[in-house]
Image (cartoon, rainbow, N blue to C red; front, side, top):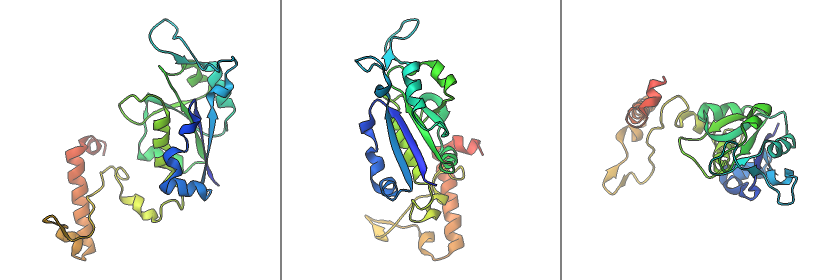
Length: 225
């Protein structure tokens, strides 16, 4: 069954964007996954195609309207999980990506302005998801990141499926350093264990390096173990 992704946005031209290239693009062309966009403005009912209004209670910026968003969401596949890209959402991580990749697909709602009317989150069962502790101009870039992380995990997308087994976050550790030819470059040699031909030694070196890098750069991951 093909993994189906639907993106709700006021900027449908941003898709597929980078998802039309490299691994994701090839998989899209091969039909391993599908991508559809819903232009939220198509579901506005005024001549200006308005999707937002001033925030209740006052304040700066604009808020996306629940009624317009609801019509856009209802036009998408209601059987798929619905994620709202939001800086206050649950952290998107590798485990989340794996969970989505094992499912039939996902609907991604891209907010803009100051955010969306809170009522749409409750009434349409949206799960808020964050790709990091920062604020973007809108949810589109976050949606691209989520889909890129998920699509590469779909069956047949990566040339060597085993590649995913040693990547960062797969087992709670960062990935070990990588090397390739030339054997010596600008006076720096490939670490000897990697050229020893001893598979047990190579595995031990990689594990040690993964633990060292994780402790130095992401000690929070060690704390989660």
